[in-house]
Image (cartoon, rainbow, N blue to C red; front, side, top):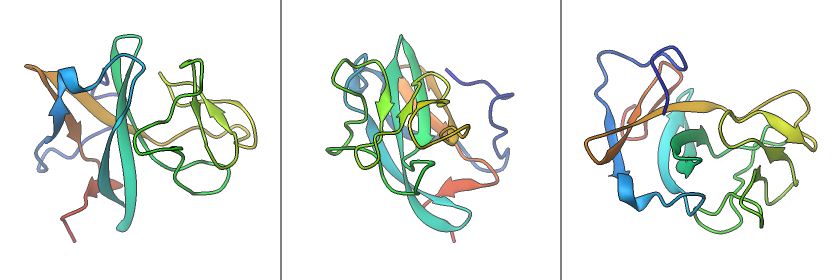
Length: 134
């Protein structure tokens, strides 16, 4: 679960409900959703890993392309890492850091997602806002 210090959210933008907590199965399919990243349409995802809900932009740092090999499927065959289906770059699910591959020292763009009262919420930031805003 993220905290305020991880990614500062916008106090004037309400939390965005994403899905019910029980919809995110441990190391299972992610919940995908649309965002505006620096005012450009982008995809994002939230998944559960080691009991924590984490969220990232669906964008490989090697070449900015969506990473899931099927809708909402981001983890490798062993369910240990997030893997880019196009480039094979490998990221650690809990912090988004590059583990191996063409991502170099760059990690995934983390989003502030939190669980509360059986619901998963995303807290928009200055850089990443809801897709319905202009």
